[in-house]
Length: 191
Image 1: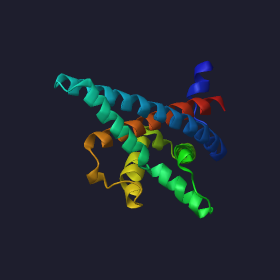
Image 2: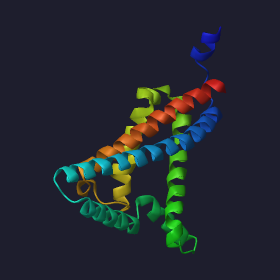
Image 3: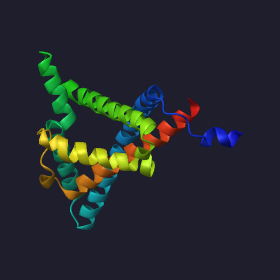
Image 4: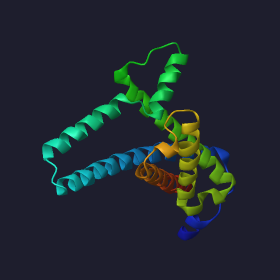
């Protein structure tokens, strides 16, 4: 009886899909953000070790990393550009100190929206959950990150981006998709 509860196929329910997708989308975006922070920190540590092994001074390495971080803070990422443009449409200026937070809000809104789309689609076309959501994460990476964002001039062309950045973003989207499906399927079983 207990096993049957978790294995039986329920009829599609769009509202259940929407609710589970929104909730899972928020959580998966949070997990994706944490993955990106950890992988970026790991990448910086590896680069530092490589440079130390080539006998560069620790001061020179630290100075270079600080310069890179300052440059990165000055450049707008795609979510910050969208946030700034939304503010401009609303007739407001987005202060520089609010740009990161506004960009995060855009990122979470998009992640939540994509979670909602996934949740509803999973109810109607269960095959979308293939690969435990990782196929969806990969599709999202290709469609949004590699095609739409550069097409709307929110980032450089994919050919102008280093391959390791593509891999890092793809891995983050796979983490998003896998987390999205895991959380969505757990929530669906409870509803």
